[in-house]
Image (cartoon, rainbow, N blue to C red; front, top):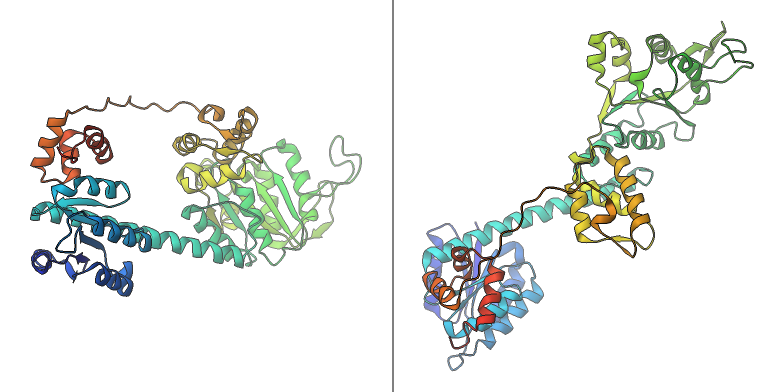
Length: 449
């Protein structure tokens, strides 16, 4: 049940608010003085109190509002995230406006309107609960991230998004198991980095880590690259050469773009995965190796199996564990940390550039982001990197509507109808609350108006 602390020297105010809140499942605590209120806050803390409603005067012979200002500043200093509603009279409007600018949630005139007060309290309590839940989730994610970083060798990987963390947790969990791993995801997402992390936390972490991009070689040379070749095995093979499996013996072989492996190579790869034995091209002598195979692809292997271009038995052999690495757009929490990593020394992003990075779709994923930041580092004239330096396509955005300019009488009328609740008056006038405060200050409303 939400709890509201009422700090008011008038016992009748405390009773009236207690009754009102109890009818709407809100608990109320009452303090008759600033000292008592601060003591209650110290004992209960922000975990036990969701909101404070405070008066502006506590001495019978005082109407300046200075006591309320002092109390608010003490609450804000000790509990900066705790929402505070001020109960005040029109004579204290200017002081209340100043306090709202300093962080008060809102102010309400005495006598208050029950419905408006309840609406304000309910909104603030719900917002506070949501903020606390968010803070708890962020704190939990940070703790989990620190545990992951302390427990495993992540090869300096930069990430912040929960989607990436889930992939990392699974990669580290299966790293020590001697089974093949298939990493799937779009090009440029960092699949090779995940393979490196698997190697770094495996039982063969001290062995070699050998990479073969199956999509970067002609099909007739892939078998020679994988298994090696004796002299004369093919045109131009003047001497024997070692294949990637031999080079990776005692370590990890990372086969990128495995979907590009021709069917003949797939059959031989399947045999090696099953037996650890193979022959070089042009040789009849079997060789034995112990290799952890990690493969990656951006292709739809299931569709390739249906089309007859990828062996189903090889797919199941490679896919003992599958790690799906999402596109960069699907893990937006990684965008700014990665962009910051790619910044040149002495450079930093201005806020508009950060917003542009977050709004971009990143079809080229992390690889595209790295290239964008490399270009921006070169084009930026000073310390700050601006939107124009990024060279991203401009996002279509509606032109901002001109801000309404209500006159003094319209503002006073709206405030009167709203019972002094600035947020309601601002909504009626089509303004933000901050915009209304600026106009009130400029027009002198509340200062003898």
